Length: 76
Image 1 (cartoon, one colour):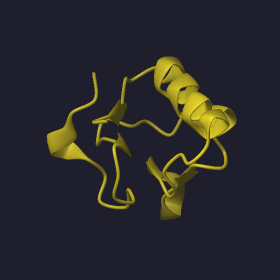
Image 2 (image 1 turned 90 degrees about the vertical axis):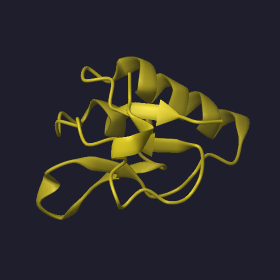
Image 3 (image 1 turned 135 degrees about the vertical axis):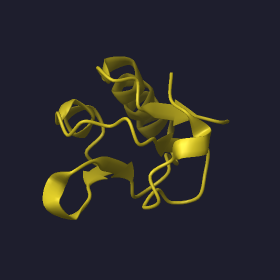
């Protein structure tokens, strides 16, 4: 389960976030490329955009379910 107290600093404000347990495995980018990207150096991922449509919400949810380190969270 993602830890809201250890969010990656690059996450944009909003309920969706990636925490510091992220391992750059690319799974979340496959699920939500319009929302999540790698930080410089590809050391971790972060939400550069919060979901705005039902399709984007579904993509974020799919990314959270697929994350092998459970680093994606939703405070919403």
